[in-house]
Amino acid sequence: MKLKIPFRTPKPKVNVVRLTGTITTGRGLNDAGVAPLLEKAFGSKPDAVALAINSPGGSPVQSSLIGARIRRLAEEKEIPVYAFVEDVAASGGYWLAAAADEIYVDHSSVTGSIGVISAGFGLHELIGKYGIERRVYTAGKSKSQLDPFKPENKEDIKRLKVILEDIHTAFKTHITERRAGKLADRDLFTGEIWVGQKAVDDGLADGVGHLVPKMKEIFGDKTKFKVFGPKKGLMSRFGVNIVDDAFHQLEERAAFARFGM
Image (cartoon, rainbow, N blue to C red; front, side, top):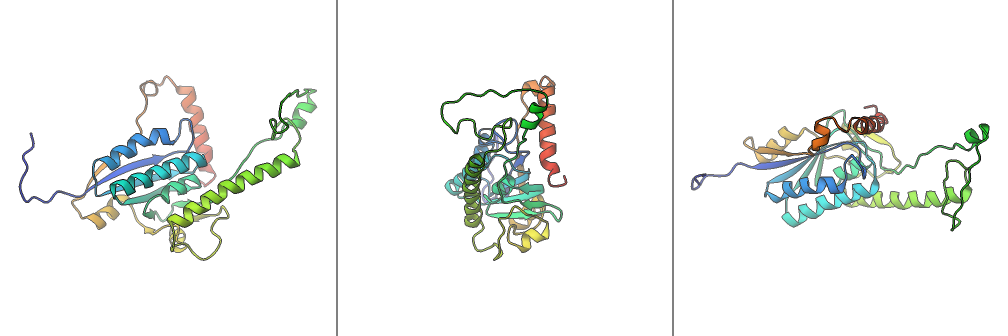
């Protein structure tokens, strides 16, 4: 039983949500997995929610869903949101950071990469070398577009570029709306990246700072912190999914390696 002391001023409280890893529909960050954490973090009436972000990006849809959920909860609960970039918040990772009211980086943090990419392989010459014949039957002329076992088709490439441009436009709109009045007057949507202070100089971040000292600077030295992060499933804790975990870690390492991490 807790005794309430009259006239005592409650200590400021900041809830920290960790958003770490690639953004995917599978084992990484996704809206379904993050939703319970965000609901709890915003639901306990903190003075602020701080996002600790370390992500090289991934799915544009999942990035949008998570970012929209953050904004929806922040506006419903009237709670300010601060993003703190650790190693990297690039591409979809920066989409998440931009959902915050203010963004802070480390001197060596990588941010930006505001662009869209689609990558694959062309294997038609390889299978031809070994005498393998590809047989595909479809109803609908576009059903087999971008088949890696066939030579590139100009119409397929044209359709893909339209899709990429549509996604890029949505990305640019999100950033320009969230960072309105802060962005430098030049093209920041080329896919380039920024390190530390340079992101601040071009308006992609609000300053160089770390989570705990910055929150104490804003809310006082007696600020209390509570961290919300994903928990491993029971099977993973006992090493049952060793192979699946290994592949996921390799994919994440490759994604981070694009930014020298």
